[in-house]
Length: 514
Ligand code: KIV
Ligand code: ZN
Image (cartoon, rainbow, N blue to C red; front, side, top):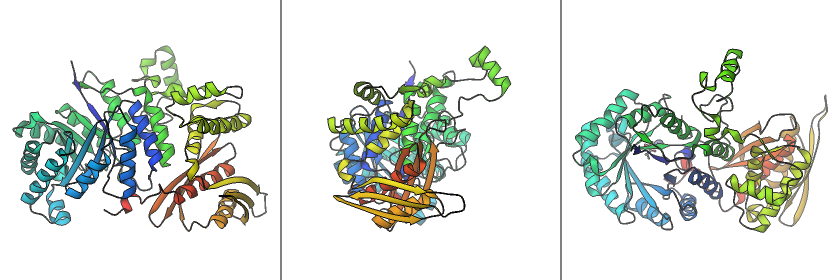
């Protein structure tokens, strides 16, 4: 029997710390549900003490998730631990993850604390967290640049205080794989009570080594990896979940452990996270990039046709790539639609939600002959805006774009019960349309991102537009999909406006109160 490798996903916490990757509470629940379906062991849902919005998101995820453990992050401070404990109350299985920095530079410059004091804070935090749950994780932040002797002392003390998982973060992505692996082996060997806790790693990708460092740690005794979908995270990101999981699975000849993940959910999860955050996946990204299983060269194609293993080390279906097929069309009924949506992990809150989604599906099917899973996912990104939060609605859009003429747009929206029309010119049809909307809604926000991607191939494919607005530190992503990209852009802008106005909108964690 091989050991279990625990997969701890921090897309909703560290992933959300990517500049601009902010998620609403509902979006966090959708991602958490997809992670749960993939059988991720632990979902770090956020940092409850960071803001009221973060607290409520962690609480909502804790209430929604049944099969995975839900975790909340807390500094080694009583008020943080209490907030995390409170937010996690409704969870079937909860974990508090507390941390304090241990590297000389962080202790001296950031914390301005003596090492003994840092140990005291860590021990107190773990003891306090144990009052809420018996599943407590401790991280010595910046462990990658901490002194090994000091790590041994603090980790021994927190195990005695009740920590059940010791997470070793390479916070600034400074470690090299052989060195990081050796550190894990040394800690396990040198700490007298190390057998009472699971060793975990949390690697950042500043030198592109997050996955390599995580795997080296596993070969040296770590039994939990902290990672994110698509490698999202602070700066260059975290170790990517899909890469570590598929490396361990593909190289079972090397690894003494297995994950319990359903890898066929990987691609769906990756697309969901990319859609919600507005961070596209590069085509050559391992496992989840559009080209990850595409063979272009004639020699490779010939080899694969003769024997798949000549150039493929994994099966595309094993990570969920088989989903790219026509699933529904113009004549599909409500039941077929609902069934496929459920298979994609979408549960409708009630008949009204289902009817609304089905209506939008029929509208799309009138314009586009073949409907793929990706189209359905995009449809749900629009529908998922809570009806109560959809204060602004697009009613009509007309654009005039001619060679040699300045493009103009006329937009009609409904705000509450009032219908209003605005016009604007712009550098292009999209610019004119978005300016016309802004002239009506006056958000006073800054557009920090506009991106358009084709959801499937062909000129009748839907364009999926992401618009990111920043209003005094509140960052929201709006999504819109349509076979007409000007309409998709208007939908995306209006979706962002609705999020800005919703009670759910909150400070991006990087600009939060902590
Ligand atoms: O990178 C880091 O050190 C962290 C800790 C909070 C684990 O994210
Ligand atoms: Zn981190």
